[in-house]
Amino acid sequence: MGIGKRSIRATLIEDGFNCTPGEWKPKCSPCPPGSFGDSVNGCLPCPAGIFFYVYSGGFYQDDFGRLKCKICNNGTFVNHPEGKSIDTCELCPEGTNLTRHAGHRACFCKMNYSRTDRFEGCSLCLEKGLNCSQDYKSLQTGYYWNWSFPGANAVAYSNFVLHLQNDALQFNASSKQYTYKIPKVHECPQRHSCENQGSSTAENITGNCKYGYRGWLCSKCQSRFYSILNICLPCPDKVWIILELIAILLIGIGLYVFILWQNRRHEKSNRNKRSLVDRISSQMKIVLGFYQVVGELFESFHDITWVGPLKLLGELIALLKVNVLRVIIRPHCYSEKLKINAKIQFIISLSFPLVMFVCFVSFYHIWKLYLKYRFRNATIHVCEKLKNLREKLYTYFLLLLFITYPPTCDVIFRLYPGACKTFYIYEKDTTVNITLLRSDFDLDCEKLKNYQIFAYVATVIYVVLFPFVLLLLLRKYRIKILYNEFDDGNSNSTEDQPENTVSERSHLINDKSEESDFPIWIKFLCENYKPRFWYWEIIELARKVTQTVLVTLLGIENAHTKLLTIGISVLFLTLHAKLSPMTSHFEQRLQMFSLTAIFINVLIASVPIPQDYQAPVSTILILMNMIIFWL
Image (cartoon, rainbow, N blue to C red):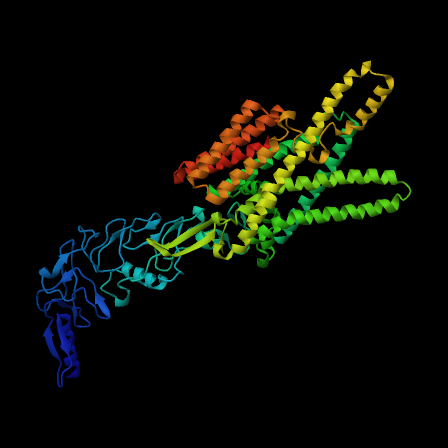
């Protein structure tokens, strides 16, 4: 009998009845209007409701004992549970697609519209970088948002997306809407670093960085990766790093021996001609100055993947930018504790001149004691050797300062308050924001006040004072040269003077013969320029620093940066074409080519390039920039 009762109950439930246990037998009644029989659980309300299991809207039922709910017309839905007639189907809210059936929601959103409530309207996605093709907001490749700030809830949004993707009869009522804030979308400096693989799924709705990248805007490198022009590359094995260091050290020693050999050879030959070392150093000044500017530009606006042979070119550009720590030594590849950030770079850059000065002074005094001991009875010989040593040390010290001047200035400027960038976390809400250092998004500018004060002091002592002192030294020796030339001109009238006067005059001229040219330790600044343009290298220093500081402080995306950088390049191109300040025609053309290349780099940065053409254009641009190295 019990089996028969269960069979009758099951049959009635399958036919659209709702059966409840009675005292002796089940009580069954047909499903009322607004509900339907699901053949297992009895009568269930037609879509939409607010119970623990909520049934979404687009359905109603106006008959008794039905197994299915009737479907509302396209563009209408039932906002409340148990719709009992077609009159309960109301027009879908604003922003929804009225040409489709509502499904288990208040109609699907239009294309490029999104919602935060399953049964409310949809709003237009205005932010660039959003994918709103599935009723909710997700990230496109090349964009970033951060859910870790107060006001946002990544878990709640993930649950909302998960249940919104599931257009089924039953879903969790707690996930039918998202009541928190959605973060603002920011464009990544390197679009490929913000990969956002699977970002349209609930599991990866917060987005993700490409392998090897991390941090704000995916701009930093993960462990075991190092950066070349803001591109993260895997660290090589330590054996290869050591071999690279040994090879570079041997090349440096070989270059030094070659310079010594050429200098001695030049001293024995005609000293009035420019030596091979002088010509090479003059051309390297142009090449080095070019890459110090271009390297800064590449870090700022080029979206390039440095793979294959381009990886070597990127390393060369970064190396010529005098980024030795990051490119050659790569300390973070040895240990995570040795990572170099903007603060450490600032300390190292300011300490370098002081350390070099102490090393050179210490070496001089040690060598002086050695010479005095070895040549105890030859004071004149010791003085001559010490004089030659001083000249060499002056030359090396000044040359190192000259080479490192633009990158050191860049490091100083990167800590300026103007080099910080404020990011607003939520759209139309300026109360929640974060200010980060543009060159290192790991550093909060609010914690850099002391460093910024030291940066101002370093600007006065180093950035301004160093070229000013060089200019004064060049002017001092230029005046001496002019005085000696004037003195030599007057010596032509000595033929009519008494013999003793002529002899005395000749003695004075011989004493001043060594002052007829710039000292060797400062000569490299002006020896490739015509005599009347002895100051031109200082102007070039100012140009390089100005172009890099504009990019550092304002960013290449700033209109003033583009305008001024292009204007400076055009101005110097015009001056070089009109004045031709260099003695060598080849060096003159090389300098003009470098200025033209800088102009083209900034010009391309000013013009939007379609995504499909970015890779070939960037590759061609790199190769063009490398031509100057091989010239």
